[in-house]
Image 1 (cartoon, rainbow, N blue to C red):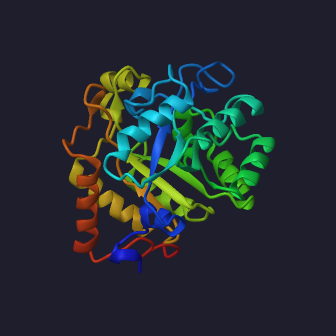
Image 2 (cartoon, rainbow, N blue to C red):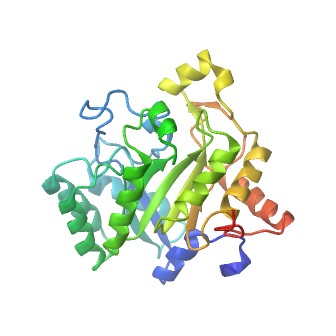
Length: 310
């Protein structure tokens, strides 16, 4: 059903269909904050969030965007000298600033030699109309992908982890972005506290009804120096942290219910050892992905097998 006989629609295949050469994301920390940290919506941020857990070592906010792009290109170009690059605005909320400041930053990244597109991660409640206008115009000239942090389709969960937005806001902004002809992605955390396995799988049913191009999944991780780490220390019984084998099966079952047109960018995430409290599976992301693919084949199943049938 999918390219290279894969049991799911892979994000790498999506990129291969758009670019005749290898492309690599270069993460950029542009020094943004978040409305859930600066007081405009909340203080302290999401309870699970320690931004250091997903910011690569070469992306330092003390450096300019051009300097960060240069570091990233130097880091990756040794392996594939002919590679081209996508500037990935990853840390915090990358649409949370004035329009002038935002577009200057994006344009600076796009001006770096070898950069062929832009990926911007943000919250669904931080995309003003005029910025959507900019991205719509830009997408007609170069590759643009907007990623929204959805995290859960259950409002009670979003409230518990202090997201300060609803699932309805996520769904509306995903639709609004897709209507502009802009590819749109979602980010989900599987295993947030209080969610049963049945509820986690129901996320796939809801997401399948949205015009998503890509989806990132990862397991709940308890990260040091977060509000959730304190909650985990005080009330460990309120968390269900999956063993690696359980999570492999969960990912396969989730994908079975996911629309087959959605490209899965990843199933897992790996936080730095120094920050990770639990679960510590002792495996790299590619090793977990290989196990998930193996489980697909053992179960003789594929992405979308049960989509719309449950």
